[in-house]
Image 1 (cartoon, rainbow, N blue to C red):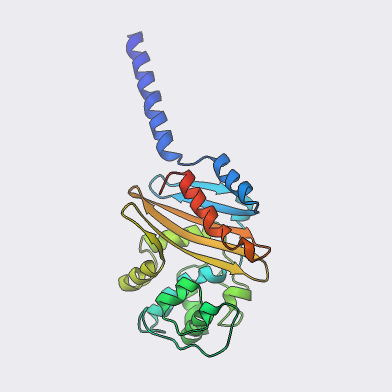
Image 2 (image 1 turned 180 degrees about the vertical axis):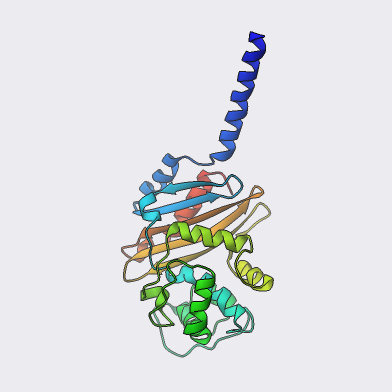
Length: 262
């Protein structure tokens, strides 16, 4: 009997270790080390859908609201398509001829091409077509951040009072993935497709960057589908200058790589 009891205890211990290894895909030290190696201040939340587990760097900042900047292009795309501000993701909006900071913005764009280069003018036009009343209605419906779009209709996500936390970004992304946002099946499908950054036989990476110019904050939000699971990631960092732009995606990929997810 004592031997049987010992075997049961050993078996329980082995099962516990197995479950632990399944649930913990990355250590806190690994995440913190990635931020240290990149010499940045910021926050990151990685959510493992299957195991319903969060991995967080700088929890206090993850609960602080920031302007979403161009990460708002995700809901703006959903709302623009659903309200028929554009017929579909291929409709071309002509360049207005105003030369702006980034050359890639100074041309005609469809939603499919505009989101790839994060064209602010294109999405400002989408917002103007949607209009203040309808935009507020949809922002309320999807419960996006603090829902405050009280500033100008075409820049409230860049310089207005709208704020969203890193945890709220994760929640929004999960609802998008699970089709739990109040949009048509086609709208959700199209937006998921235009968010694809990388796709192989083993994984699909979707995401969007953002840059709050005045506050010098950079965002990356998105999710990785791999290993029959989904790993949502949202992060923001201090970006003193343009040399930090690439760090958003490099930190994201470093975290996914450390977790052996792609």
